[in-house]
Length: 323
Image 1 (cartoon, rainbow, N blue to C red):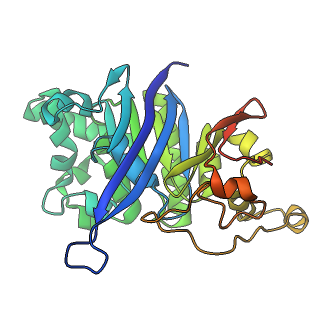
Image 2: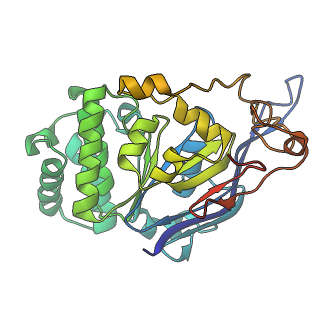
Image 3: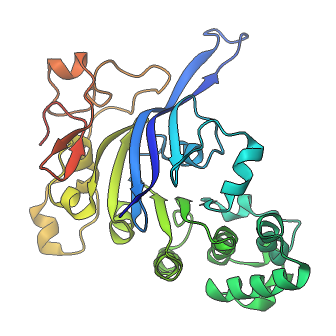
């Protein structure tokens, strides 16, 4: 498969605090020197604890956030420094579905207007063509064409997420960044949305970046998985390889926390409890970012920051002493 999207040494920094605070202005390293590639047709799962930078990276990839450093290449085109006007033709091919559909859908506009707006801007369709396409899209995501005349508050959370998905696929994108699309939904509704995304990927030949903190959902939908910790990628590889033999201690701890439905297997598995809290991205630790909580950390980990290296010939891990 060809590489559709590539991020090279991407960093995103925010300035926090103010001149009126005791500490003055500080720099928060939300995304720190991240590199990854996404192949056409695959689903890359992006996982990690809350606050690790997953959503920020997703917004950087879609240029909703301006990156502080690095390069973004989409479909062979460097989009890192493009102006908003230059980005407009690319927006149709690079879409995003947000975690909270209630916040991402304008409550003052009807569903038909919400889904039809990208068709008017990018596809230059007339009113009749937009109405027909909106009806087609609503049917495709499991809703009724009659829903086009309603407002978003008249729908359940799962239905609102379907509307957000319909808006994202309206202009035939190549890549969709899904920012925790099921985390705010009931478990039964989560399964419906996950199945819908799988069906749409097969029908429309879509590529996904699936951001989540639920590893059981990520395992179900993803081809590969990238694990983030404190703004950096600590491990990346095929989903089954990483679940079978994680190379990074942090990945091992995350996988051990996934509930096991088989009672016999659950009894044989030991839970790994990490000590301490996640360090502040304003003042990250020296060396390996994970070393204050790592059970196998050594002096080298405190002094030298590891880089992603090939491990077991199939996966990459940023660890001096991979498992």
